[in-house]
Amino acid sequence: MPTALALSPHLDDAAFSCGGLLARLAQGGWRVVMATLFTGSVADPKGFALACQLDKGLSAEIDYMALRRDEDVRAAAALGIAQPVHLPFREAPHRGYGSAPELFSETRLDDGIAADLAAAFAELIATEKPDLLLAPQAIGGHVDHVQTVRALRSFDPRLPILWWRDFPYTVREAAPREPLAALFAELPEAAVTLDPDAQARKRAACAAYASQIGFQFGGTAGLDARLAREDGVERFRLSGRLGPIVPGFDAA
Image 1: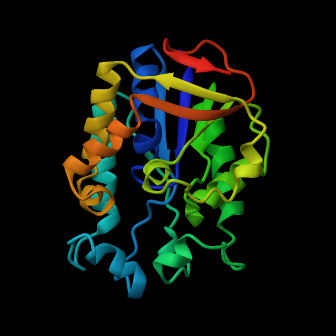
Image 2: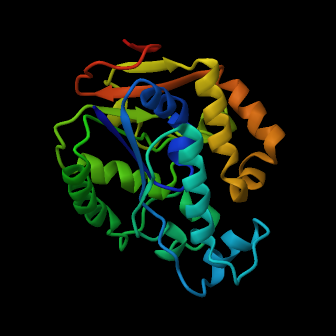
């Protein structure tokens, strides 16, 4: 049984950006593992880190990341994939990024998380033995996404990688920031057309992240409107060569 490993910066990124493909792979007999990197709980968050919790209507006493990890488990079940993997790294607001603009600016000189991520990737790949990796292109420019790309590119996993377009950043602006666009410009484009079941599974998985839906989309109606703009297609850049893939997948 082939294995696909999705490296998701946050607890929702993989489902939002390639949940349909993950569901189709599982339907096609693949073992699919969604590993999220920045899921570590932080006791007594302060300042901007606390504000990121409070602005979603959650009290300071709630373990925000534990709540999100539970949502991720439900999302994986909706996609029909394996139990998700949660790595213990801390999100950017807990690494010195002190405002929303800083999350989408240059990475801090003292943010050495990429080296730690690269070591974790090597261990995870050795454990899961994937035949295919999926990872973000860092469209939108979130520093956690940028560091994820840098970490994965810092070593050669000798595996094909489908680099997803980071939804919903891709539909928030006519020309979203793409700070790493040059890294992907020469890679062939690839796409998967989702059948109705995969679309339904993706929608259910996205909706499972209930703490994020209001903030990200303004509610479930906004989620549905954003997904409709994708027209049932997920798009990628491909590095390496793919073996057999699920029906509906097209590579240029």
